[in-house]
Image (cartoon, rainbow, N blue to C red; front, side, top):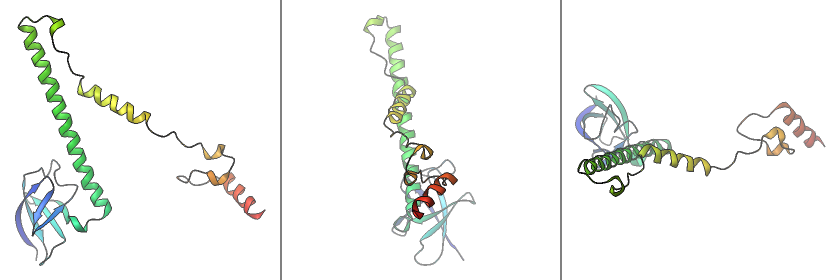
Length: 173
C-alpha cells in the first residue's frame, strides 16, 4: 500500500523526508512552482515519489542524489529554459516600459531630438545572439567520400561499400 502526503512544488523540486526530489516535469504548466501536489511512496526510505495533481499522475520524482546523468540533465535543461523565459519576460517588460516613457515624454512636448534612445527590441537581440552563435560554430568536417584516407571517414553514418573495399584492400596488403 502506498503512503500519501501533500507537498508543495518548489523551484528546486519537492522537499520530502529531509531530501530533495526532482523531475523535468516539475515546474511545467501541468505542475507549476508553488502548486500543491499529492506524493505517494513506499516504505521507510523512498527513492522515488509518484506525483499527482488533482488525482492525475504528473511524474515520478527521484531523489536528487540518486538521479542518473540523463535525469540531472533533464532537470537542468528545464531550469535553464525557465531562466531564459524569465529573462525574455523581463526584457519585454523593460522595452515596453521604455516605449511608454518615451511616448509620455513625447506627449509632454519634449522634442524628438531630446527623447532618450529606445533600446533594441528583445526579439532583435535574440536574433543577433543566434547569429553570433552560428558564426562561432566549427566548420563541418569534409565529406568522407572526398577523403583520400578511409580511416578519416565520418563515424556518425555507416560506411559506404567503396570505403569498406578500400579498408579491406589496405588490410590485406
